[in-house]
Length: 210
Image (cartoon, rainbow, N blue to C red; front, side, top):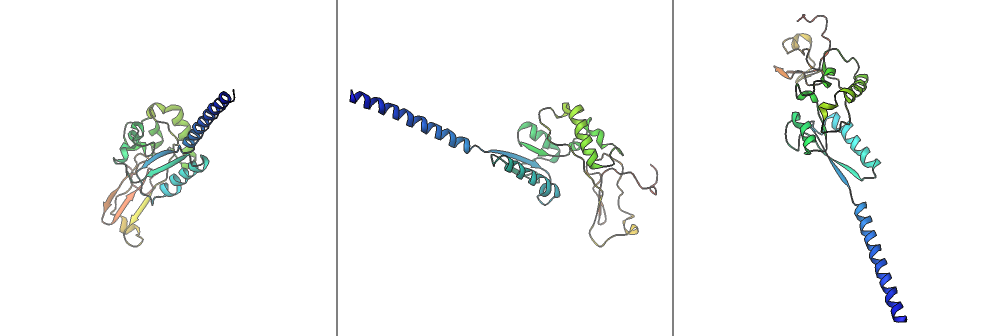
């Protein structure tokens, strides 16, 4: 009797021990299960978008998930390809998250390109909110296969020079920014030491009419 009882107790203890070990193993596996998100974009790490926007956003994800979700950021197209291929990289699973300009693929995102038309947007802050509401309602077919997280507009109009500040006479031979789509780099042409990069803006009154 005592022998049978001892065997029964031993069997129960062994079963409990196995269950405890199984629960511990499962709990350890869950605790160590970290999701790594591959974030790919075309700008360098020194860019404002990378340092002030993408990195803080990834830090926020890590903090709010108790480090269960972490970003691995690949700037400067480190996963390969060209900026125009970023959308398809997200769609095909090369990257989990991408940040890009839809207008790099002319004619593919024709609905959302409405906000790239000249003189449509006067405020990028208000325009970004309007773009989100417009695109999520009317343009989702263009983004089939991915989940848009954010739509936004940006300002442009930068004039870079290699020397001292230029006056009008020195820059008169440089290319002028012309009216084209708003969210792409509009012109990147060199004339001497001058380079112009801008997006669509209303031309000054002294420009000749086209």
